[in-house]
Length: 233
Figure 1: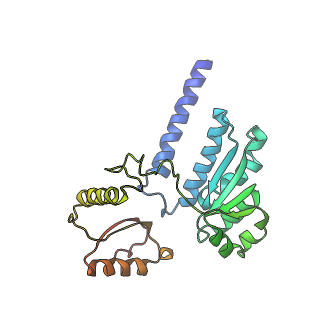
Figure 2: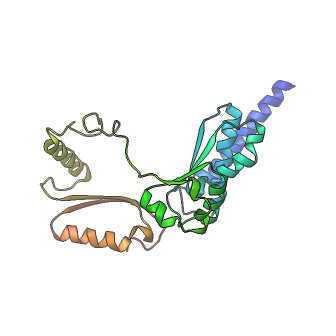
């Protein structure tokens, strides 16, 4: 009887996972769906439930923006009463333009809060969702892992280089990119733009810079995602 119950529960869990995937996670995009709040709310619950059921007790739970903001209060109000109580919650704001009310609640429940630079922390410090939490709010400049992305050790570039052969190394990387993109292999300025394309990113400036580069015989490659239907016009 116990075995049958276990098999039934396992099958029920599998069906729930299939249902959740088909409803929430097979959308073909991350943002821009009508049910974004429901999708990310489910993900936040699932993440904490995974920690609880697996017995994994992290020292820090790091949440980012509105999409994972519910983790902060779900953890403090519910999951820590079930034994998931070791972690401290850090909340990072990348973009205050979206989900300000959720961000404000996460600010309230987090132990520490950060944003992507000291300058941006000053820009948003007067916002009502931030102002009352300045004692735990810090601007930390975004950066890269200098060990992983050291061009001397980087396995993703055609020629490793240091300060001694930086010109040759960058030239090899540029030529490999031109070849992959089907661009003319020439000693021309090559401008790369990789972004989430919204009005906040300055679409008019990006458009102007592209034409400015092309008019001067430069090359441009553009990788972006967007939910704006007219953004490519």
